[in-house]
Length: 84
Image (cartoon, rainbow, N blue to C red):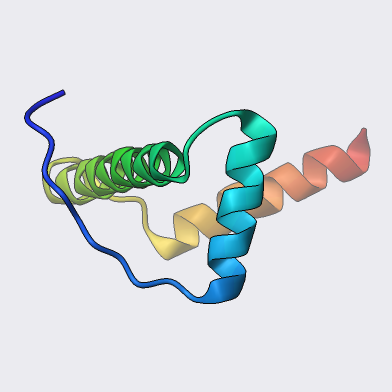
C-alpha cells in the first residue's frame, strides 16, 4: 500500500450508526471498514471494465454470430431438452 492520504466523507447519521455498529461487532475501526469497501469496489469495477473490454475486443476481432444462428442454436437446445 502506498502513502496514506486523508479523504473526508459526509454520511448521514443512520449510515454512521450502522457503520459504527458493524465496526464494534467485527472489532475493526469504521475507517478500516470503509477502506476495505472502497478497495473491493475498485477491484470489482476494474474487473468489470476488463470484462467489457474483452467483449469489445472479441466483437472487433473475432467472427460474430448472427441473430438467426443464435435463434437456431437456442431452438435446437429447447428441442433436445424436450426430447430428453
